[in-house]
Amino acid sequence: MRFLHTADWHVGKTLKGRPRLEEQERVLREIVGVARAHEVDAVLIAGDLYDTAAPNAAAQQLVVRTLLGLARDGVQVVAIAGNHDHGPTLDAYRPLAGAAGITLVGSVRTAARGGVVELTSRAGERATVAVLPFLSQRYAVRAAELVGQTPGEHTSAYDQQLRDVLASLTAGFRDDAVNLVLAHLTVVHGRFGGGEREAQSIFEYAVPATIFPVEAHYVALGHLHRRQRMDAPCPVHYSGAPFSVDFGEQENEPVVCIVDASPGTPARVTDVPITAGRRLRTVHGTVAELASLAGELGEDYLRVWVREPARAGLRDEVTALLPHALEVRIDPEFAAPTTVSRPRVGTGAERAPSELFAEYLANQQVADPRVERLFARLHDEVTGGER
Image 1: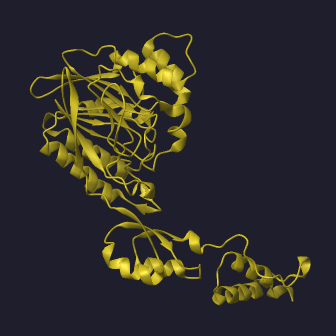
Image 2: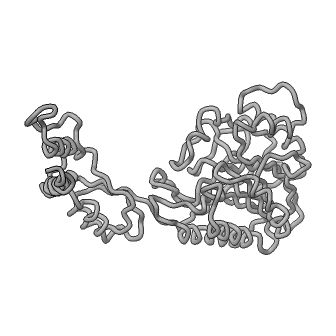
Image 3: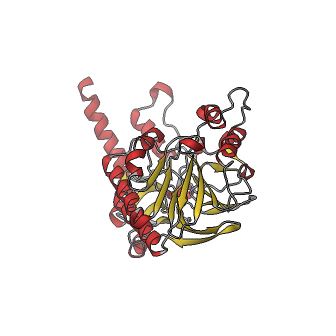
């Protein structure tokens, strides 16, 4: 059987206030094209379809259109909730999505009630998919009791609770089928992409790769945005995000994974690049150097480190040269050291506001007389009534 594994779409994501829905639409359209070109039997989406638990209508429409596009021509689609998604909402749409060949799983379920999904390829091959949406620590014990059907004593360790859930869901793995796990979680030693919510990714939320059963032909993971394979007794892969979610991910290479698997044989994985997303780039230079770079940067979204001291209007100069600059900062080399200060003209109550403001500008290494004149004018306007 052939599968397409993707995750972490984060539809509706904005970057420094800049909407990215049109870009995300191009990315998702490319993924649909890859699925058709490779004639996959099923698509596995390992969580974080949305960037927020309350996506706007445009984001929901894009996800729905994409899921329907993937499910054309008998392709089966299985999507689970990530920590950014609202699991109960995905569950609410299960009946409607199921009519279109799309299986949505928003919360942890028993095998009999949707925690295990059975798939059949066009050629009649069978696959069993154990699905594990993101599970918060708050609900981990409840989920272990629900799925394991063994209320009572439970360890407080998050990884053991996930072991219990997975053990129950994978108990029905068969020798004559392709056995898969689809999950949204953090594996110990996984490399972060840069845009993950650390509070739901580190410390107690990180679990060892040994929680996955050796009988699994492939484990399709979401949550970490960097494409990577984890050391484990079975093939365990993060597909990574299909576009750079923020500047911490500017070096990532977005892909989807094409997975070929058959009973008794470990999966073979091929990475297919996704190129429709805008590149994120960090550039450094003086205003003059940045002007010379402008023609080379195209449509890339930029984080700019200016190698000049701060002055009034500097950001406007940079954004006029580089309209796709989303973040403009002073290079640390030119930032104000905290020890720099002007000699004080007076002390305590004797010091005039203009003197205090001048000292502040010196500490910030802002050498711009226009700012001081503007402050003096504003101060006169505000205090004029006191004379």
